[in-house]
Image (cartoon, rainbow, N blue to C red; front, top):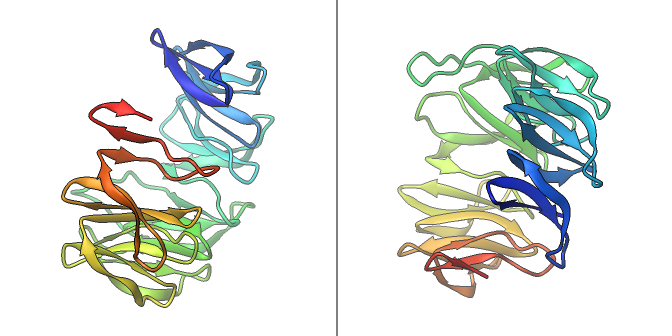
Length: 260
């Protein structure tokens, strides 16, 4: 099912475009692990695919579920991780976090502000145990065994493994996580693709390169978007204003404010 906005409210349609959950929510997130995050009157809860609430709206912020848990904020400025019954598995003691991927989650215990930021991101396991110290200015989630991190405001980005050791030293202006063995990175104002040893498989020459899905990666040149394969060959020419990653052989694309 996919979330759609109709008449100012969110509902859900099936693959035929038929409404299966009536538009009644102020916000509707994608279904993940059988549940979807929805918002009603400023509070987030979770529904199943019949549209019934499994976890009633009571959170000021929530993500979708990953690996059986999700990060939520409950009536305060601190959040923790709940299971699919709504019980806190990891207490709400964090100022921010990403969901768990590959068994670990990036968390911070202090407010992040660009002018007063401290190296406060670290990683916990599902017991809440800190396994990688709070030493990063910013950290993203693990993908294919590596996480994208930086230790300085406007500093270079690199990739660590699950022990916290740098596998690819910080050297990139901006970057994305790994997908299908490659990652889009920016160096010297241009984007290319690297492998897990940090070697350029596609040299930096594009305005933007993102992530792979089904063997194809979005790239941008002259303000238009298309798709590359893993050798850097242009498979779909850059003629679109916006594109989404491929899923089940299809990509939603935009040209002149029209989608298809």
